[in-house]
Amino acid sequence: MEWTGVGGGQVKRAPVSLQTVSFQGEAGAFSQIAARELAGPDAMPVPLPTFVEVFESVVNGKCDAAVIPIENTLHGSVHENYDHLLRFELEIQGETFVRIVHNLIAAEGVSFRDIRRVFSHPVALNQCLRFFENNRGIEKVSFYDTAGSVKMITEEKLKDAGAIASAAAADIYKARILKKSIEDDRANFTRFFLLRKQARARARRSSDGASLYKTSLVFTVRNIPGALFKCLSAFALRDLNMTKIESRPLRGKPWEYLFYLDFIGHPEQPSAKNALGHLAELADMLKLLGCYPAAKSGK
Image (cartoon, rainbow, N blue to C red; front, side, top):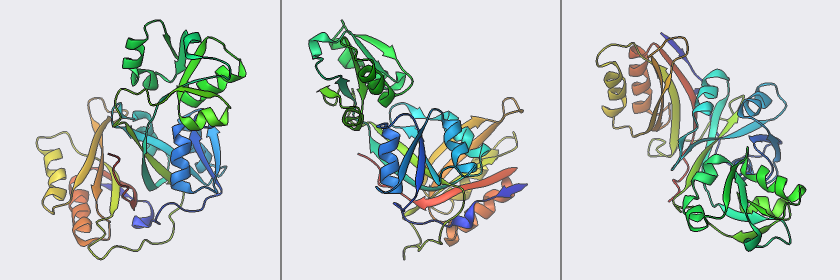
């Protein structure tokens, strides 16, 4: 059995002072809002086109940290980033929940009655379907990024088009918000991770056994009856709250899977240490992805 870890549960409370932090998208993306919360207001944001480039920017030392979305309350998990967490040797050191507020934005001088097309990321468009049902004369147009769509309509001075993005994007590109909060569901939150290459100072655990910490890991099991049940029982028998489990295909082994799991607790906490030891005996591979202060769930 292979058992690898990152930093032995060494974490530091967010936000922390960082020099550069990368994220996917253009300036004004929701990921930049998350980066500010996780890395602090003094960190320099570095927008990059793809998630792979975001991970690589930390691995190759061009950036001190990265912020990535990992799941959305409506859209579900960002599967690409789960795969990258296993591929790249980076440690999760923080999390935050960002409320996703979609705004209809246009260039200066463009009014709502002028709008015939609206650009945005496909996920954002699909989270505003009620708006398009009520305005059937407006066409949805997919674009690579929410903030990037605002950048495009302002740079090209489009007179018949709008974009759906954050208020921060409207401010950055000197555009106007025509309609605020047009998303279908106000309970729309995205969970983001802060990633770094090396562990930071050892965390101070709370007196109640580090219940304020969350640990993320990935493991594989043999494809035999009851294998996953036995692995999960390592946590259930010790009253550890599993907050997330996600399966992903195991590359090179058709119909076999990796399991990503989050639980509340710190690896140095006795019950968590025993659970991880129990899981290590059952799993073919076990890797700790990080231990970090648990953010308050957005509600």
